[in-house]
Length: 247
Image 1: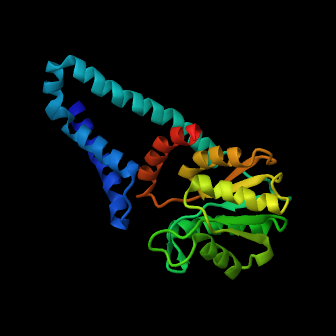
Image 2: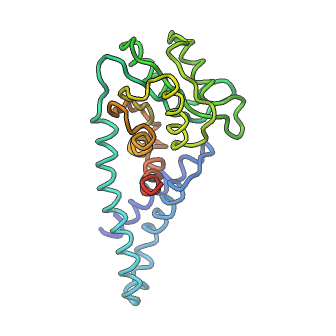
């Protein structure tokens, strides 16, 4: 029974580690899922060897147990930030949409879902302004923020409600550079609504709180992530959150 459970769990982890490769996505999350998948698939075969080396067995199994406990605890906090922190229904707020890959002059699926969520909220709340963030990455024809701003305008968001931050290259810079633009327009004390994928919300909150210490509060609107990509991105965030805290 334990042998079958270990192999089955390993196959699931390996599947979700390999699935993002279809989209040419490889990160720490995909690598770790693949490594853990191989470990659990091989565990029944190497259990005899580990039994003969009790200290090594304690180190390996203890490390896996600590990581799983850490993952469970942090995942609860990530979920709370993502789905239990709704924005004000109306009023003067700043919506910050975090960038993601663009394809030519069009947003990728993941980015489009973020923008659609932002639009829904901005149509309901005409007092909200929006900061779209992201510079031009490798293989992109335009800065992400330019593509994002054009997309919002195309679906009825007035240009004077959109602030384009086109220099950043990561989440931390999204907020640092975005904060400068908000300060220039006297908007830094408004409540901030962060629009990004659910897995991203906790790390985004850490950076947002650092870059905008005088904000009127931080809220979240989470977009849906393609199910085949969510586990790898979620695991990547588990590794990235301690780095964000240290930074």
